[in-house]
Length: 280
Ligand SMILES: C[S@@+](CC[C@H](N)C(=O)[O-])C[C@H]1O[C@@H](n2cnc3c(N)ncnc32)[C@H](O)[C@@H]1O
Image 1 (tube, rainbow, N blue to C red):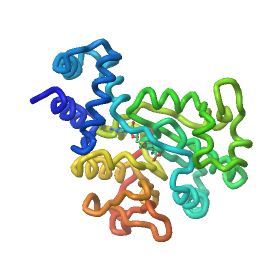
Image 2 (image 1 turned 135 degrees about the horizontal axis):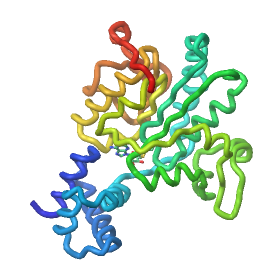
Image 3 (image 1 turned 180 degrees about the vertical axis):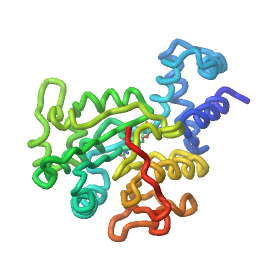
Image 4 (image 1 turned 60 degrees about the vertical axis):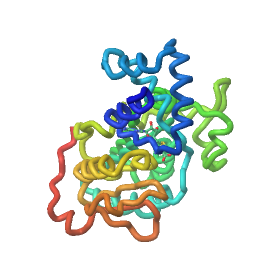
């Protein structure tokens, strides 16, 4: 097996990445750049080092270089309209005695998705006065997570999807760029989580966004991750996938919620058989 195939196999095992053969040339180019940056000239030696598990920093750099972190504020708009118009009002009603909500952005990339959620909730602050709302945001990429935690965006990034009123209300410009408001930053618990590994310790959620990440994985991985998300999602909770992603052939646990592409609830038959997992 050559070094590229060996790297592809390793990334498949560790992070579930399925490399589309049509993207081989671009992945090879990324590999060449990464090896040069890390001081390797022999690709077989590079992959052997990765596989040895002795160099976690090299593995992190490789993951950072290979994953696609493309994202934007309020991506696809509809999920955030659904959140404001359907999901949060419904949960406000059903959780009124507990006054507690947990939301997970399961592949948050550089943070635009969880900050978009935080802005929606902040905008509805009056509805949730006295509530505890936890937003957990996770990703496999350490560099994406560092950018998400920092919460500083370029002019180009804030121009993609973020309404001007939101920009002026929740960001301030300094020498580094557009800095997100501290109270939004403080509202998000950023975690390093590999969706391929066990994530039960995160506890139970009312809403899970797992958007535009399963599309880079093979069918078996998608099935496994959706099955485990289903177990962590409240019986009456909501799952959000990317607008072009489907559950067809992957899971019978969910049904599409009418009116919003990418919004799913547990199938009614499934709800009756579910037991909530205790939060940590
Ligand atoms: C295209 S971005 C999606 C970002 C955001 N959810 C959105 O829809 O705009 C895909 C993200 O999935 C992350 N990712 C890929 N494999 C992962 C894994 N096994 N576990 C956790 N995150 C992963 C990547 O690091 C990347 O940040």
